[in-house]
Length: 72
Picture 1 (cartoon, rainbow, N blue to C red):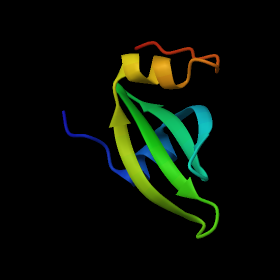
Picture 2 (picture 1 turned 180 degrees about the vertical axis):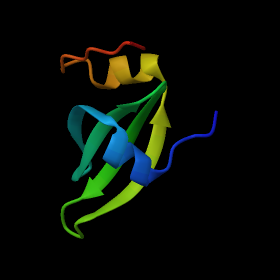
Picture 3 (picture 1 turned 90 degrees about the horizontal axis):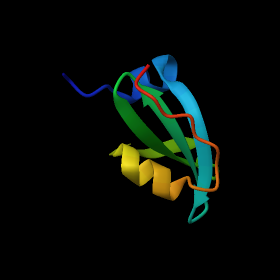
């Protein structure tokens, strides 16, 4: 399976949660079997990076958020 592009993640992915990390807004999306974080800079109004994240890592990082993560 080919990993999705940033465009696919934002347009077709399901928004799951968000957090702040060193002044950047980090948005967590689910697209098919992937969990993807996008790092958005409010200063530049641009996405700085996109990272694929493992399910168990997302559960740790977003532990204060209510996450409904399933493969359904």
